[in-house]
Amino acid sequence: MRAVVQRVVRSKVLVDEEPVGEIEKGLMVLLGIGQDDGEEDVAYLAEKILNLRIFEDENGKMNISLLDMKGELLVVSQFTLYGDCRKGKRPSFDKAAAPQQAEMLYHQFVAYCKKYDINVQTGKFRAMMMVEIHNEGPVTLLLDSKREF
Image 1 (cartoon, rainbow, N blue to C red):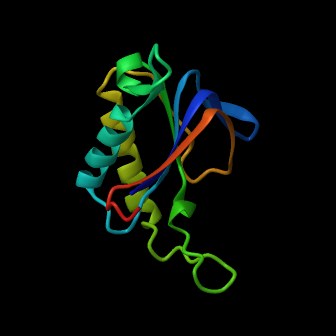
Image 2 (cartoon, rainbow, N blue to C red):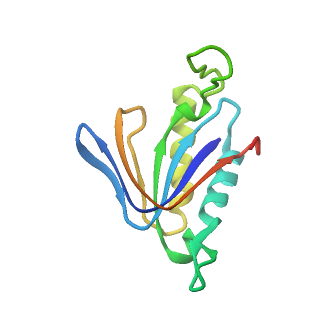
């Protein structure tokens, strides 16, 4: 399971020009599901993201997590995070999970995060989405549950 995590002042997802998910200060997460992912990847990545200390404290040091500050979370499915561009000119998505498996794990990830009593919003799985991201910093991190990077 892979994630692009961005610290945002606000973020919004639109489907057919209608908002389906919107947050204020918090984290925007683009989430990709791999074919070898399971529940342990959900738990690992959710815990890692929710507890990342990437918000600044009173001294300007990254020392506060999303949970510490009761921030908001927007999670958008992004199978292209498994695009392999090493050969040729078109990405291969062979390592991305099949849609049914990916959707199940995506919803498990969202449910896991909601246990922490924070505002969790989502995009729409398998929809063409427009994502508006107001990245603060900018702060952008790449995470992988298999720890490949």
